[in-house]
Length: 444
Image 1 (cartoon, rainbow, N blue to C red):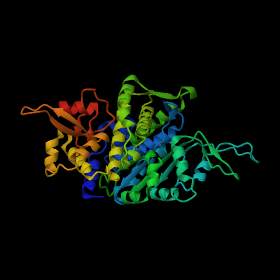
Image 2 (image 1 turned 90 degrees about the horizontal axis):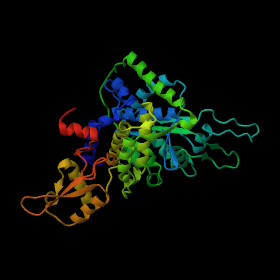
Image 3 (image 1 turned 90 degrees about the vertical axis):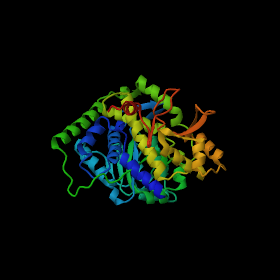
Image 4 (image 1 turned 30 degrees about the vertical axis):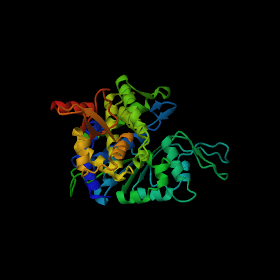
């Protein structure tokens, strides 16, 4: 990893999650602990979503086509070293959720696929004696050494990788053995992992990248947020208030009738999601394209969790924007963690220039000049950036001659834009409509 990428990761962590991501109970949690801990704020957000989604189980869902999407989330916090406080984020959030539900189903490391299936197994009355099956179908697995999971998944004959993928999908799990066949349905499995960047790059195989294992995980870059030799304790009254609000939201979900637990987008949120859907589902041939191929589903699941925490069966714009903000951070983390390359060195260099240029963009002449007036391969590089929807061009009026061709980096693909308007960009991506209004008006 180059110095430039390290600096970009540091800059990403410094900018952090867009304000829209701190909504509802997530904001309440951040207000309680965000300023009194060494844990990454965005790391805690990812943990809150994963833990709440797991406690939801299958009591709430969003229908997308023929599939039902639940609050299942796999997250991995990635840092440069142990000092990035990856585990701190999980510990801070666990402190709250342990008070919400002291008996919540937490498992350790995932050792085998058979072990997962047995933990969640269905009843089998044909056995002698009959097996009543698992009474708890939810499972939250905390992989403090995510590299170990990757190693176990790569072992010959292991069904662990397949089982993890099926668990995220929510489909039927089975071990397909003749001696003791087991199945598990109606389950809700969530995974929280921690790993340093170097180990992740070394152990995540090309097979994991290509077969859909990796793109079921949300990778978030985290750094140490503060320095506290003796961290202050949160306000007891505010802590109990947050616990009560989380418990109240979960009780509200549990009270939903089984046939009336479907969540839907309200009209404005659906319009915006539909406008963003084409780019959410576009194919990208690069490594990052493979690692983020499930971006639409990930956004929907996050939006579902935000709505459920808000006790709303309608996913509104604020829930969608919150999910978009989290995913935008995840995707940018993934790009930088894996130091994605297009396969064209000049295209990668130009992409860096365009990111730095932000909303100003660069004319073709400026790009040529930046490249030392070397035109060889320039057209191919720009065409690749346009084809991969990494950058786009505009023709702009010129007082002194023909229209100038100006290039811009694509921003966050999730914010719907009016057909005749381009996204409003910052150095780190697109601003949501709310932020864009503030940025252009100068109002908070």
